[in-house]
Image (cartoon, rainbow, N blue to C red; front, side):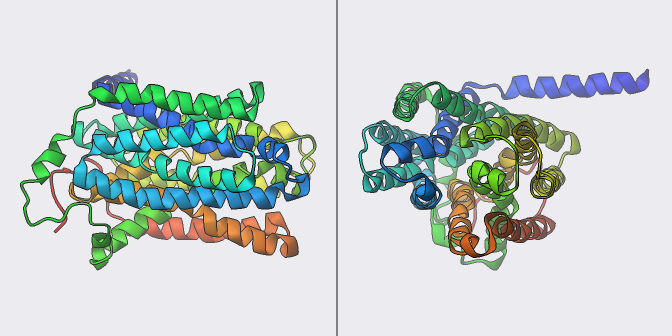
Length: 421
C-alpha cells in the first residue's frame, strides 16, 4: 500500500511539474520547434520525388540527395554560430524572429525551383534559418523556468515538436512535394505572428551588469581547455542521434534494400515511424531525467538503447518484412529521444553570456556531423558496400558518445545565474 502511495505521489509530482512548466513561453517555443522539425525533415521526406521531378535519374538520387543534404547541413552549421552569437549579444527573442523569417521564405521558394543549383541555394538558406530556432528557444525557456521544473519545459517542447516530422511525412504522402514545402513556409509565417508577444529573458538582461564579460564571442569556446572540453563533449554525446536520423532513417529505403528487407520501404515511412518513436523517447527521457535527478544517467541509458537498436537494424533484418524494419526505426526513434536532454544539458553548462552561442552552435555541429558521415558514405560505399560503411561510422560515433558522457559534469538543478569569464 505504501509502495502504491509513493508511486501515486511521484506521478502527481510529475504532473504538477508539467502544469507549472506550461507557460506561454514554453507553448510558443513548442510550436516553433514543431515547425522547425517539419521544415528540417521535409527535404528528407520529399527528396526522391522532388529529384525525380527535376530530372535526376533514380540511380543518382542517393548521390545528389547527399550533396543537397550537405548544403542544408552547411547552412545549419553557419547559422548555428551566427544566431547563437546574436542571441547572446542582442537577445533571445529577436533571433527567433529573424531565423523563422529566413527559413519560412526559403521553404516557400522551394516550391518553385526548376534546377538543382536553385535547390542547393535554397536548402543552404533554409539551413541557416533553421539553425536559430531550437537552441535559442531552449536557452530562453531554461532561463525563465525555475531549476526544478525546467526539464519539464524542455520535455514538452521536444515531445510535441518532433511530431512536426510526422506531419511532414503525412503531408508529403497526401500531396505533392511542392505543396508540402508551401505548407511548411505558411506554418512558419503563422508562427511569426505568435512570437510578437514573447518576453525577453531576465537573466539575459541581468548579464549586462557584468561589464567585463564578453557576450556571444564564439571564440571563447576555444580559449579555455576546460570550457572547450565541455563544448566538445556536449557535441559528441548527441552525434548518435543524427547518425540515426541522417543515415539510418533518411536513407532507410536504400539500406533496407541492401540488408535484404522484403517489401518496399520509403523515406517518408522511415521518418514517420522514427519520429513517432522519437516523440515517445523525448517524453520518457525527460521524465527519467527528472526522476533520477540526473541528465547524464538519462542520456547514457538512451544512447545505450540507440546502440542496441542499431545492432538489431544491421544484424536481424535479412528476410524480414518492411513492417518489421519500420518497427526497428520506431525503436531507434525512442532511443534517440534524448535530444531535449542534450540541449538542456548544454544550456546548463554555460554562462548567460555564452549560453545561446554554445547551445545553438553545439546542436548544429551535431546536425552538421552528417556532412563528413555522408562524404564517407559517398567515397567508400561503392567499394565496401553501404551497410558496411555505415556500420563502421556507427562504431566510431557510439564510442565517442560514451567517452564524452563519462567526462561531462552533471548539470541537473544547476543555477544558471552565472557568466563565463
